[in-house]
Image (cartoon, rainbow, N blue to C red; front, side, top):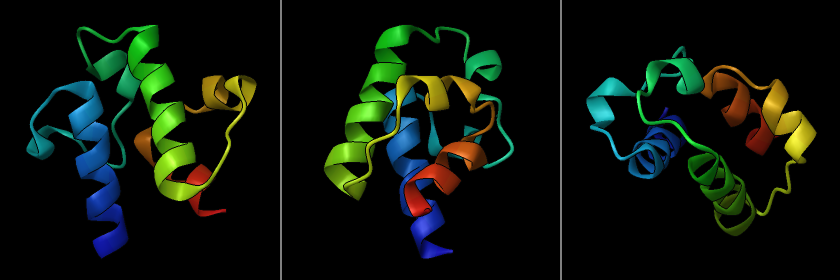
Amino acid sequence: MEKENIFLEKIADILECDTDTVSMDMDFREDIEDWDSLKGFSMLIMFEEDYDKKVSVNRFLECRKVKDLYEEVQS
């Protein structure tokens, strides 16, 4: 659970929102009003730097929920 909380905090930081509003079931593109490709790119960089996990753009685009992203960095 601790790993999930840290991941959610990192996502909230990138999305520039309160950690209480981010959950594993959140559709990060639909639920964030000011979603843009820069936030997506920031997530890809965070995956590489913090989790040593390179996620392809195509795979990232297939992810809809925060839990999908979490599963990518944990695999």
